[in-house]
Image (cartoon, rainbow, N blue to C red):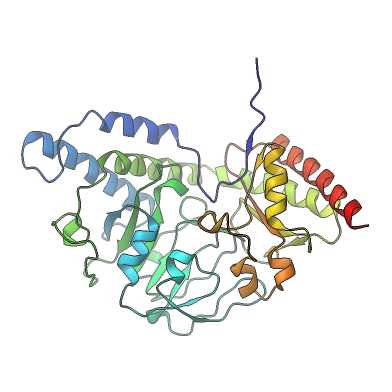
Amino acid sequence: MIRNLRTYLDWNATTPLRPEARAAMISAMDVVGNPSSVHGEGRAALAIVERARGQIAAAFGADGADVIFTASATEAAALAMRGRGLLASGIEHDAVGAWADLALDCDGDGIVAVDNPAHSTLQAANSETGVLQDLPQGLALVDATQAFGKVPFAFNWSGAQMALISAHKIGGPKGVGALVIKRGTDLAAQIKGGGQEMGRRAGTENVIGIAGFGAAAEAAARDLADGVWDKVAQIRKILEIALAESEKDTILVGNKVARLPNTVCFAIPRWKGETQVMQMDLAGFAISAGSACSSGKVRASKVLKAMGYDDLTASSAIRVSIGPTTTQDEVERFANVWRAQLEKFKARRA
């Protein structure tokens, strides 16, 4: 039997599809109706959408809020932010940064200072470094795409007016996200042409994707309650110790503050991150050199630069992000292969 030697260590980019999501999607495929139709078939499709809406609201701690389905968290960000002129920092995901005034300061640990929450947006967790923010009450918008399902989070106690989430970050399908808003929040539709999603987002709902989103959210909440991510944090710690022991000059980004339990961002200055990603890919490991939405672009991490790192270090950082199915053996094998590549790099520079 041929053994699959690929090891997936890029969970922050996207997660494997959960069995619960797959089952829900397959079941939804047999429902023929349009959820906007009033006949029986349409009502059956609508029931799937509304069940998922309830599952997501419960898992996200958003009972009493509105969950508006979109094609992605990126679309949700545009729906939430267009015309609002919100303030943000340079560590925000490009989907948020594209609509914001990047005027907020960030310190060397990746913590952002917010003086005017009502006119600001702030991520709950950074996708590259894993750094968690202490969210101020009254925040206009929180990007919760990385925090949702990995750390305790409830929209209702976050104090935020709006939040972004995405299915494929929690074991759901790609191509479906949501904007969660406090009921009564003013919101102008950006996609017009129908009355779907309470008039906020026109277009026939992605019933199959939404079904998977709902099932994934329910399963993710159950995993979090069962302590699954505490075990992930233990494996992450094993990896960090191995990396630090491999090279005393290894920079572990954000390791002095609270982070996601699954994320390690580290750098060896002068060893290009893109080079490391390619070398490890050839060795059978999937990792990244930053946000998946900017991969393929050889440039220094804007997140690390906003944190005060120089171009040399910011262009040398890579990210390993693990999940509940990642094993200790996998991270130890990664560390061993990475160490061997590091020795080759050092030999070439000698």
